[in-house]
Image (cartoon, rainbow, N blue to C red; front, side, top):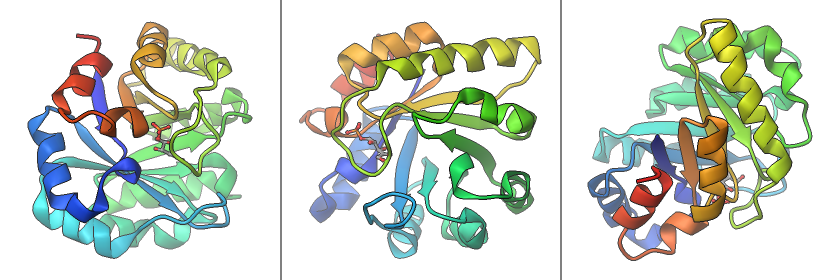
Length: 214
Ligand SMILES: O=C(CO)[C@H](O)[C@H](O)COP(=O)(O)O
């Protein structure tokens, strides 16, 4: 099990200390949420912050683009230092092209879907991706409640991966805490993103251990 703290909930006044503490605690990915105010109703952060984080750490930067027509920005996020770039299937009319653009940058290819989107929509492109992000809240804000109905998507992805001998990671994001993490682990998740639950601790090694099921 891997843990990916979502920087959306960190203390930005102490970003350098936060990243050091996340790394020291044994987390695996830094989850970097980009919001455009169109695909989701909120705005977050993008290139200048990403570049500075990249200059500071060798951790895997896992970028979730909550952005309309993400094709426009894929090369820029690759250049700014993302290691994994994840796009929403709902955000583009040309999902194969968007995924191929990510592949062409040499970065890992991620795809995601909103809670209301059926998982079967991803079947045509599952062979193209390194990571599938299952959103368990409607994206746009931290601190929302976990939508339990999304667990069946994790189970589906797990079975589909076995049946078709694929190797994508299954990541879960939204409302992940000590209780919902166990449901995700039982359903077959590989990576858990956590924002509000993670950063409410003073000692980040505690949520890392809990989310890894240790
Ligand atoms: O993608 C996101 C919001 O769109 C965040 O990564 C996610 O919501 C994490 O926050 P929390 O763990 O507090 O739900």
